[in-house]
Length: 248
Ligand SMILES: *[C@@H]1O[C@H](CO)[C@@H](O)[C@H](O)[C@H]1NC(C)=O
Ligand SMILES: *[C@@H]1O[C@H](CO)[C@@H](O)[C@H](O)[C@H]1NC(C)=O
Ligand SMILES: *[C@@H]1O[C@H](CO)[C@@H](O)[C@H](O)[C@H]1NC(C)=O
Ligand SMILES: CC(=O)N[C@H]1CO[C@H](CO)[C@@H](O)[C@@H]1O
Image 1: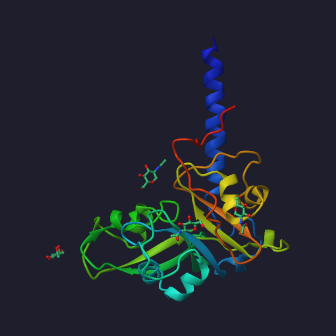
Image 2: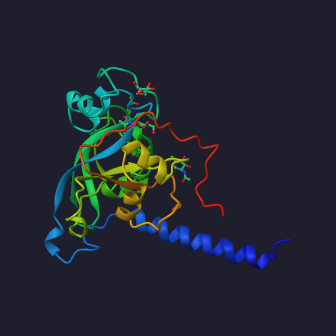
Image 3: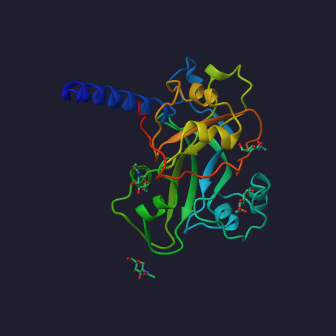
């Protein structure tokens, strides 16, 4: 029998550790570690990972969403051969974005979305992974007074992203790719997908080393030294087999 107190203490430590780590890695304040106030207003070209879904299931539709062209997306995602090729839900695509330090000191990339039919804020948020934008952020950004969005109206989409700040300026890292985590992901798996050392992911996200817990619907930054490429031989998460909290 394990004494109840021990269980409670262990649980509390784990919860604290998790809450702390989550808070630590899943935000990208532009000025947190910088002494240079000019870093507000900084911007950089970088990438985010977008997953195909029932609303946006082809390179053609996704390039319209991100105001880029199909040819650029196909070039960045050689796994896809044609703009109209239907992609399975969850298929990951690298999308080029311009990321900048917003007034609230978080890095974001802004897009404009024009609704083609009557829809809702939550439906639009649903077309993104929660790690990239949450319904609340969409509501706030657009000063929306209700969830309804009528056809033809335009919304501003604030998506999470990151630029290298001066703490890392001597690193041979070229981009921080924003990767929204889903159920069953781990830093090890993400490291494999992008062919980077897992330790590098820990370091750039200021995570505790060794099996840091990661959470679905948050974003991890992948430090890549070259143009990013997703390795599709790494299978996608099987949520039934994996867990998020360390078990030891
Ligand atoms: C969309 O919503 C507007 C305002 O509520 C309504 O007038 C219009 O008929 C709706 N259109 C469709 C296609 O449902
Ligand atoms: C993650 O987001 C999805 C979609 O909004 C939601 O269904 C799911 O419950 C969330 N998972 C967690 C662990 O918050
Ligand atoms: C992709 O991952 C597999 C499995 O880990 C590995 O064998 C292969 O070399 C990787 N491919 C590239 C291009 O890194
Ligand atoms: C959408 C698509 O073509 N996906 C392919 C990407 O590459 C992997 C591995 O080579 C295939 O299994 C996928 O079908």
